Amino acid sequence: MVGFAGFFYFLLIFISLVLVLRFLSKTSLLQIFIKSWQSLIDRFHVYQFYKIPQFNEHFQENQLYRKISLYLNSLPSIEDSDFTNLFSGSKSNDIFFQHDANHSVVHDTFFSAKVSWTNQKSSQPDGIRSFVLKINKSDKRRVFRQYFQHILTVADEVEQRNKEIKLYMNLSTENERWRSVPFTHPATFDTVVMDAELKNKVRSDLENFLKSKQYYHRLGRVWKRSFLLYGPSGTGKTSFIAAMARFLSYDVYDIDMSKVYDDSDLKMLLLQTTSKSLIVVEDLDRFLMDKSRAVSLSGLLNFMDGIVSSCGEERVLVFTMNGKDQVDQLVMRPGRVDVHIQFPLCDFSAFKSLASTYLGVKEHKLFPQVEEIFQSGGSLSPAEIGEIMISNRSSPSRALKSVISALQTNAESVKGVNKVAQALTNSSSGRSVDESGEPGAVFCRESVHTVREFRKLYGLLRLGSRRKEEPLDSSSADKDGSLHAVKG
Image (tube, rainbow, N blue to C red; front, side, top):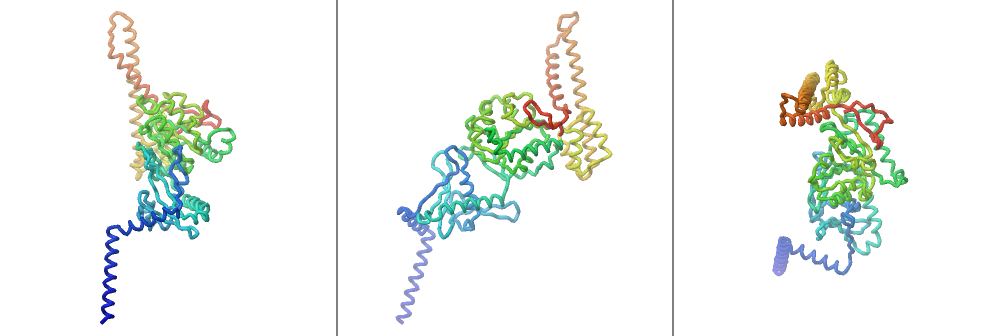
């Protein structure tokens, strides 16, 4: 009887203890106790802490921070951390883990030394994030240097294994100026429609750049290269930039100048880019014509080749314009822009490349008619012709007929504008005589203004439709030694 009572008493104690523990876990008192105990241990300096900030004092990215992030996300223990983010991978059935910067504690073990990592945000206005390493002092003396070498080695392996080009976009927020997404543009030098000789020149130029670190240093120059791509919209400038990025395996930093506060902010954005990057500023001519822009011409020139541009190497700068005739030559000089590449409207040679790529057609009975229309002045951008071919790709003959119709419409509109402009020009010449005071003269100021305005329009149309036929020669170059494209 006594034995039964003792067993019953023990069972009551056990049930009470379970209930207490359940209550503690629900009210988080147990977690508070554990954290208090860890804090007590830390006060006796059993552990040492190391902070790895995301940026240095010059606001340049700390490469060690990036490598630690890669390393921690590769650890199996990331699944067991307090908070873990789940993301889908490049394949539909891929799921990968990523530590939560705001909450997670990631534990790691290296040669029996147990360490933990957290991510903290600075209380300062800059809001810079930092990784914090917690390691036992006795373990620190034994494995510290070896542990960080191990981190760097694993991070490099992960980076090579998961090499992915990223597109960075500048934001208007103060705490985070760059945000990245995977760069998935499929364009390559093989898919870009361009004169084959020019394409090979650009490819060779980029290959030489990759191998020229010692050469640039021997000359006392910063290891960087700058390109200007200019031509009407739809002529392939953006696709060419994507092809350059894929060829170099460089991340792309696309600077939206409308989100740049001032000259200093533009410098800061440049400082926060990394090496092995392609820095892009599109529609530079439109930006320079904007009188209300936040960045001055001086600030832009310093960005292109000032002292701040030397705070980083192995960079390629790419600027795009619709036309460079109205741009200050200070912007165009060698050193600021090394290579000029023109992207004209489509000609017959480029058309045949497009037909081969989009339709799989190398020869067709309609080709002579297309060539004749090009010679008579008809022209479209590669993007316009490409879109027609995509829409009619199931029938190459229908696609070519649609291209012919569009080219004929363009040619007729150009001829019509030319005739009207010529007539108005002649009329204007006659009125100029009347203006001198001959008998019977009729002077109409509104007509003169109309003629002047149409002349401007006529000049713009002529500029847009004119195709330059400059021969491409390996020795031909501008005064600044730059390359020029003459084919679409």
